Length: 286
Image (cartoon, rainbow, N blue to C red; front, side, top):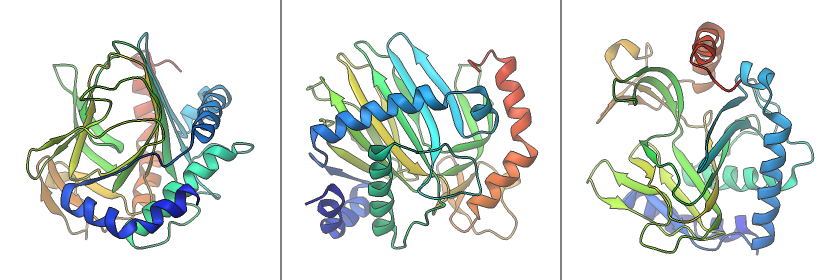
């Protein structure tokens, strides 16, 4: 049975887990040969697509690289998209991973994911004593301000409804093997296993996630949709979209009835050039 079929057969159970706990953990979904192929193709994507022109058009995101952790991210879709993406030509394992994500996302959210809907593919390599990832929610950060302590405050963004993480390799076997989740409703922290082939799906609006310093190497790949059922985040009333209905969350307000594609197109048309110029001024890699 394929990985997709295995997961889709368990969709009712996974949906119940997401509603009750904010996340669902699926052990040993992908075989080692698939993981190795996906690792190779992710490395190929980095070599192929990390170009200044791809960052300028916002199809590829700045890489975070330190001696102990490297992170890459870029936008992909199964079919032509009205927004920037990179080509998946010749990358069959990445295509299969995206198809798996779209099938699972569609089943869990109750609607088919259109082929034009983009997802951010990111992959990270953690080495021994890796730089930690501070607690955050994933998303397209449309407006944020840097804080004095080196962090930042998000004022407006598009938040993927769900995030899917696949562990490619991991030598850590202790209590914390990778991603740590915190439930905003209860304050409860979870640290699911992160063994090669395991898949973790979590509610990106309800949960915050982080990764502590890891003692041994780990590699993962993740997908999340910025277009399909993404929610609009506004820290204050000033960032709300006209006519949209919002609900309160700890950091601000979220709406599920904003056209995410239209918001992103507006961002690229009116704000992205200024953001890109600020990146260059700060000494961005590209």
